[in-house]
Length: 392
Image (cartoon, rainbow, N blue to C red; front, side, top):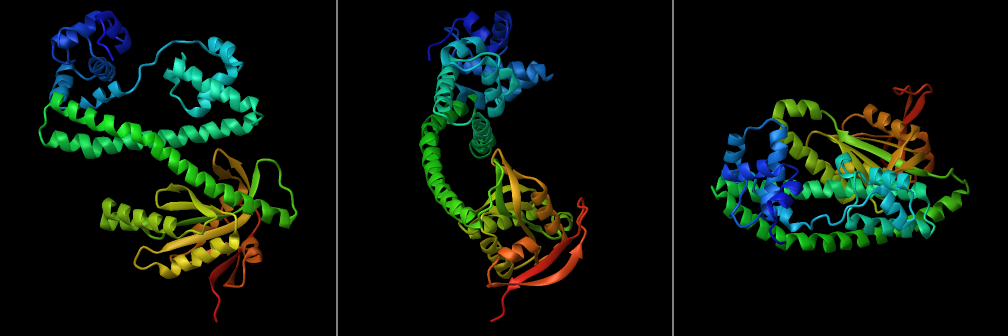
């Protein structure tokens, strides 16, 4: 990318020409006197944000000298947003209503400050979206899909930035590498790595897509055998919640790092042992939510997981089977809440299940009734069972 004139650089940085020139004279923004490089503009944008947060120019200069602002130079690797279109312009170009474009932008999760105008690349994205909708994909499903895309990709991008900072940027600062040298090293590494991220993600997406197409086919067969139609947007699934009994006490006694290590081992063990039809939906602290299509397989996994687990804290698992509302890649509703409440009733090392799980499970698992309980938030009592391997 070519160097810019002062007025152009100031406009892209979002500051006045006089301010940008003053920052350069004071050594806050790099400038060689011949023009304004993309790295200088990227740094100026960062400086502007820091100034808005109340940081002094002296503190920002010290940060620049020690390389703390070097990460901003990587913005040079991203193409500039060419073109500037309004929602009305994009609507005429794509056939999408302006209100729908804004709704898509909101569903994706773009920051509110970045929704005012549309670049040429954004316009091409909207053409793809218009083609998907024109092909007949339902709008209600598409908005959920782009919301999942946005959440997943935002999490990936956040992880890429934070891990690069923790394992590349921080070590360079600790080694005392100068700001410009550090920026060059980081930019060189990022320039090599960035083009590889898309093919890696595309391959993983294809692999997982194939897996879930197969699982969905099996699920359709089994739901047809049950011969009971569900309302649109609902799925009948087995839901398991698992956490570590005594985790809070462990945090206090052993410290946060050791407790976090225990959680990481626990979550990894769950991921590595789940049946093919089940997957982790989310984790909240030490709690894991798992959903599968086969209650018998999920219960068998839970009992086996408890048998294999050694050491403390012990896991506790609760499982329920019922009809859920599927939205944005997650599961909602009364049945989900009930599964969470069942898990809260379990002791360390136990697997507690409800009557629907017992009725759907196979003969490999035995269930000992432990009585009817009133779960928090539920008016009616729930019959609970302790699941264990059948005795031979």
